[in-house]
Image (cartoon, rainbow, N blue to C red):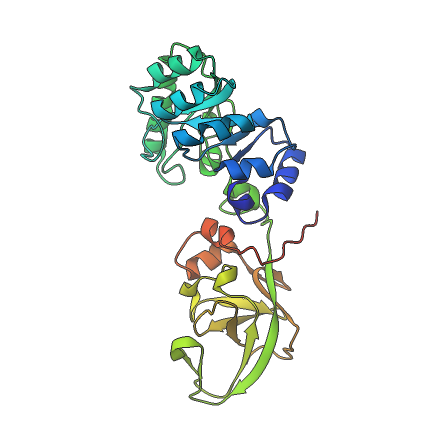
Length: 323
């Protein structure tokens, strides 16, 4: 899964690494994302999973990528393109987001199979609670298999497992799994995070007891303190929910984030971090010495999940890659 700019890491570099690591295909959400990956693999090995409008059928067919279909309307639009579009029919087994119903699936599969403009390249579903609800996940999987058995045509590549599904239910792997967050080293025990997020200290000042810092004066010094300003803010992915919450690493130590998160900067109380200087590296995600801050930890401070933490990292944050 390399949608959303490779979960914030950069779609093309991630795609290269995934393919070198043994991935047999790539998946994205939009046609624009698919276009970015042109030339890395055969187009059919790129699956466009997001919801498309019938009006987008011509553009979708022109990519020659595999296209997820959840409705008769989109199937009919693709059929009119005469491009032999490889289609992955999505079946809603309980997620309630995209997908045709199990009752509709046989008729829609036959329509796709008999259309000169399409062929059934795959059949799939998406688990709603594979990280936490074994019974529901098993019901969804069994419903998928039952529906496939009633299609009356070959299902193509069958796939159901997202990262949590692949981890908790390896017996549900079928013909392919769609690993997303796990390949970035999050939400999967024993993996190493692929990303570190760092910036620099751009200003230092001493403040007296009672002084306030930031918009809304949300932080007030309990005594004399040293405050560092770091060049990263909510435009770069540090959520405003982080106001007065959590830490940043400086010189191998944790420094509390204080005050409101601004668009372009944050402030830290570095009173307990000796020797801080302008130009020092500030680590928001990653390791500094013996200390580590993970995306999951940042997510707790931000009242969200690691997925949003990673995909919120803004485009002006420079990406640097190493093996």
